[in-house]
Every structure is written in structure tokens, then in C-alpha cells.
Image (cartoon, rainbow, N blue to C red; front, side, top):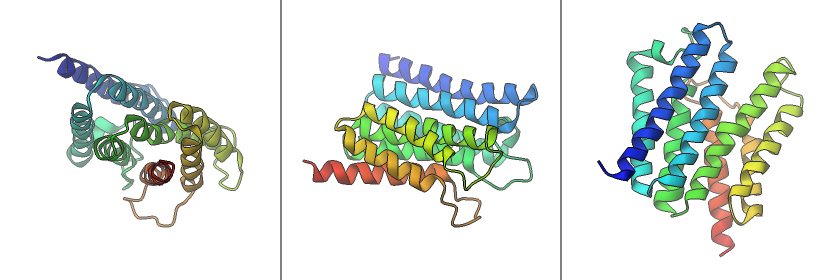
Length: 214
């Protein structure tokens, strides 16, 4: 087995362990908001390792495989995603949207546009920035959507993550776009999820500005 394959197996194992950790927390009585956030943060670290240590096509294959695995579990073995899913009666697909959005960002940002950090930074906004907003909203503000502090927390984390990309102001614009769309909920359709919009908005904004800045 090649070095790249060994590294991919290790990163894939970390992704699976993030789901197992969320399940363990759920089984021990942790709230869904806590277990989901642990999985999301660890998942963000797995994506970071992928862009640091893998070549582009191995990273695309790995992230795509993880997305397919999570979708398959959601369709047939949902109990195995209990730590990252909503209530059993919920039809939301956020636990699938997260890895699919991540895989799409890697494929477009790195595979198509040739920039690993353009691919990763929107994932960081989703994995870490969105979690900061959710944590503030759930733990401090008791879910009040009109309060600006969740968005302020998300923007602060996203601006920090933006430092991974050069030129910084381009990533900062992506952070603003990600923060702006995080609160958009134009439909209650179960396939709508802010993971899609955060990655799509920030990646699009950064790609456009990077192209104009050449």
C-alpha cells in the first residue's frame, strides 16, 4: 500500500471516529447540539489533514467516499448516525449535507480550480464558524434568532480561519459571505441546510475575487 493510501486510511479513520465519538456522547446523555458539534469540529480537522497531506485526487476520492458512506448510513442505518442526526422523526439531512458540501468544496476548489486552500477555507467556515454561531445561539441566547451575537461569533472564527488563505482579504470576503447566509432559511424543505449555503456562498465569492485579483 502506498504512503498516500496509508495516510488516506488514517484520515478516513479519524472521520469515522468523529461519528463514533458523537454516538458515544449521545449514548451518555449529551444533548444533540453538543454531540453534533464535536463531530463537526473533528470532521473539519480531518479535511485539514487531507489538504495538508494528500494529493488532490486522493483527497477527492476520500472525501467523496466519506460522503457516500454517511448518505448510505442515513438511508439504511440511521441509528449509526444518532450522534449527529436530529430526532428520529426529523426529515432534515444536515448530517449528509456536511460531508457532501465538504467533498464538493474539495472537488471544485482544489480539483477544478487548483487551490487546496480555496477548497479548505469554506469547509473551515462550515465546520468551525457555523459551530461557533450555533454554540452561542444554543447555550447563551436560548435560540433567539434576532440577536447578532451568534453571527458575531461565527464571523470572528471565520476571519481567523481566513488567515489560511492568501490573499487574506479575499478569504475575509468569503467569511462575510458565509456569515451572511448562515441565517438564511427561505424554505423548510428537508434538503435545505446551511452547510450547503455556507460552502457555496464563500467558495463562489472567493473564487470570483481570486480570479478578478489575478
